[in-house]
Image 1 (cartoon, one colour):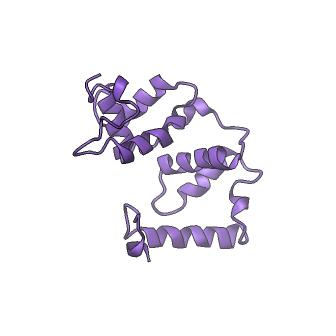
Image 2 (cartoon, rainbow, N blue to C red):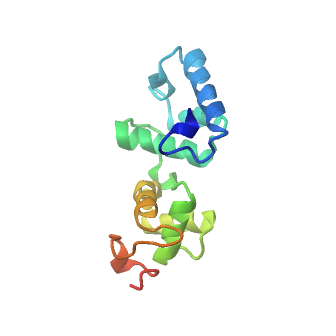
Image 3 (tube, rainbow, N blue to C red):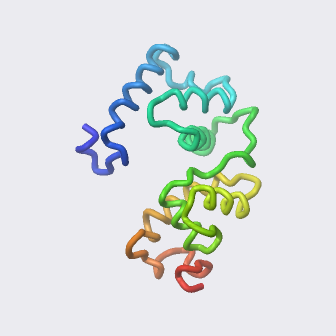
Length: 158
């Protein structure tokens, strides 16, 4: 099933196990109601729940909480936006490095750069950085002319 998707998961061999574990979690612990994963719970509890699933580390768990908040309006009483980092993946690391705000393409450098750029909520930069990385800032041949950040990008010659 996963191999036939137009956009396959990066770890296509792990995806079935991740989906199975998530399904079991929803079915057994939350009695078939996925909303119960986050309803009436703290961000810390939700992140800990997601971390129990195969393939979900701290960055994915943070991202899940950010998506719940951003896309679905879920609010968590304990969520400190200043402590919510980007998911430092190949896209975010590459874009921040090429922009000239990260010293290299490492995870630590990308997270530090995002914290400097948006100290009140670094994780909010994740979505736009991934979009830029997937759409224009490709690894081999970036489309700098079409990129909305070209005027401020070190790689594009700004």
